[in-house]
Every structure is written in structure tokens, then in C-alpha cells.
Image (cartoon, rainbow, N blue to C red; front, side):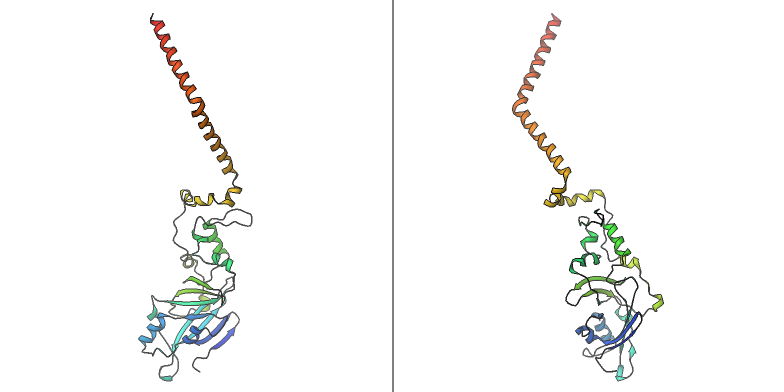
Length: 272
């Protein structure tokens, strides 16, 4: 097999390619999934005593998943020791390390927030959005939509990191797979996908108070009729208090003194 050359085999629902770590780093193949082994590559070369200049070989399989935006990525890593046939390297050496997988996905810049499970859209109680009916959608309901609409851009053992707008790729940080799964065993684990969301405690109503700044935004004040009603009542109340202290307070004090004086006179007359 020629060093550095990429071999691709395609069948219905399955795309296989045989490439090198150098080719993946250089991203010679446009609109294609790339796997960057990172620290895993260094560990494998150190363990098998492979020189840093020599590339490793990656057998990559992309399995189409119905109703999902992304394929399932399976891979194995090989190296031709002593220029002989390819030997499969033990990826369990890379346990507890992360690799980077870039997957071609065409989404607009305005939509990236709803595809990122760690964004404020899903985790900030003050983040606002409305449904087609004009009602507010809570963070909990947004997460349910994330699963129902299969909006994940990364696999269930991966974490969404960024989106490359130039190459139209979703960049995911993933744990190393130590073996290739059989195609009929491949499933989407929603429990693992849930871990991509930030750990947010269940919201209680008092936490809404932290969103008080939103109340004073101009666009919100204009539509808030209750605010104008309460402000009118408050202003009238303040005016009444000012008038009372300026004009009626002394009259009230005078009347109270007259009542006390009359009561004393009445008591004295009764005694007489």
C-alpha cells in the first residue's frame, strides 16, 4: 500500500477509507470526516517504538444513521512493522486520552447555538426563545426538542467543541474507541448525549429573580402593560403622600389635638 495515499470504499450507508495520520492533520480531503489522534498518536508511537516522522494508518468507517445529522464513526489504527503487512495497534493504550473528530455538517451561523448542548440556549434560564405559537420555551423543553429532533452534531461519547465555518465542519472531542462495533450493534445512547449538557440544578421560581435586568429592557417595557399599570399606581401613591405631608398633615394633627382637648373637657365636666 502506497504511503500517504487515501483509499476509499463506498457501499450503501457505509463509507470506508484507509488514510494516514499525516493526511488527516493536513485535511487533504475536503468535505470529509477527519480524525486527529493527538496525544493518542504520541502514546502509540512511544509504546511501539515508532519514529515520530512515520505516520500511523487509520481504517475509518462512516456508518449512515437514519434521522441523524451525522454518521457513526468507527476506526482502527495500523502500522507496517518492518515494512511487512499492516498490524493492528492496541488502542486501549490511549484510554483516558481524547481525540478530535471533524464531521462535515452544513448549518448556518445563526443556528449554531441550538446545536450546541452547552450553549446558554439550553442552560441559561434567562435565555429567551419562543415557539411557533408565540409562547416561551423553557430550557427543559428545549432539551427535549434537542433529542426529539436529533440535533446532536457529535456522537454520544463525544463533546461538541466548535464549528469550523470555513470548512463547514463540526469539531468534536471524543474518547478513544478501543474496538470497532458491529454495524447491527450500533445504537445512539441518549444517556451519554445528556452528559453533554451542563449540570444545572432544577430551576425553582425564585431563580427567575436573577433575570430582573430583562424587565427593564426597552423592547420588553413597551409590551409590558402590567408595568405601566403598576407604575401609574405607584406614581399616584407618591403624589398623594407628598400632598398629605405638605397640606393635610398639619390639619390632621390639629384635628387630633382638638379631639384630645374636647375629651379632656368632657371628662372634667363629668367629674363636676
